[in-house]
Length: 484
Ligand SMILES: [Ca+2]
Ligand SMILES: [Ca+2]
Image (cartoon, rainbow, N blue to C red):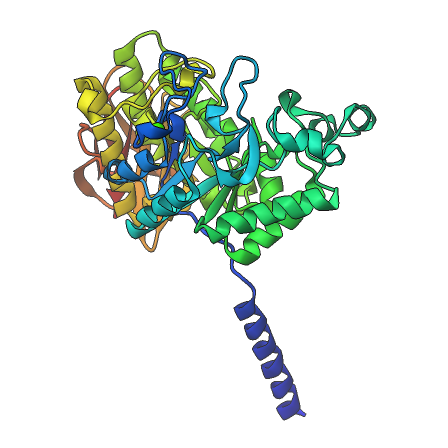
């Protein structure tokens, strides 16, 4: 009897082992740093494809392309990023709409070709090969909600799109009504479904390892779930853009199969606390909800992107914008998740709402000393994060702070494999020293001589003695200390 019971248990164990072996584990990006590029506004590597280019007009094509991006890969590597997210490079509608050219890539006409302004499919292949040869991953923007206004498919296949009748009858207007008037794809229509699932396979075959899915708030849920399940099976990492998503929305969609979403609520809080000088309680309250997330290490964290005003635009003054961007980038590198840096944020580029936030990237040859200093701070913080497994992927634990200090001081630990890093964000307007009782922080750290921040180029110190944590922090900056 015992023998049979044992055999049964053994068989069950073997069966579960073999099913675990066949199921594809979810793709991981924890530990990666993504650099976001809008190819038209990055670097022009081939002037022969510059039809209609006018760099004096922010709504026109500017000539950047895939050969230019390939040429500038060493720059992205020098910053320390490990992955590149390209906004869409599909063949676009040829006409302008509302006086704007489709330079941004979100007005597709053919999802399985590259727009001649960006180059050719072969240029895309060259880029992917070069990126992966350099050990970097490629994240491609995928549009699944709409075609461009003037795409031929809109007239040729009226049955693929939601019309006025569907929009009027819709229970969820976000899904079945056009977004900004864009021809809205009906994903429940079998041909549309097949087209979109096929697009993902097509770009996977070009070597893409991850997709950033545009405007998922506006896409039919059942289709999205099937798409995500196919991506997961293929080992493709998925990052959803639900504009303004908070922790609850990110958690819901991680449960539905997304590996990651952008945490817009944290971006808003960081802008408020770091750039606008509001209390750090805004950031603290977003971080306090991280346990709701299914996979907190995969969530995409950012200071700005191509759809919001630039981070540095939050102040009138260029030098203040640069200092606070250093603070923002250092703070970003202390958090749990996948940092995403929009081209130019590493030098505190300025710009108001679209299209002003999409000015041409400025490279090293034309940087001011101030821009170079921001880049060096970003580079140093990224290097420190990558060198520390705890900072890269350790769980984040908020430390309690006295109420009278909480507006100016945010403390948390990142801990992995017995290594602990203490992160300290300081909003004070002047350099300040703090002595905090270890008991109130809830940590049992042993005496330790003063140690300096892991981030290069800043004067911040931490030490432990007499039951206290002593911190000496520069004004408006974020630091990270090893505590062992
Ligand atoms: Ca070009
Ligand atoms: Ca839609």
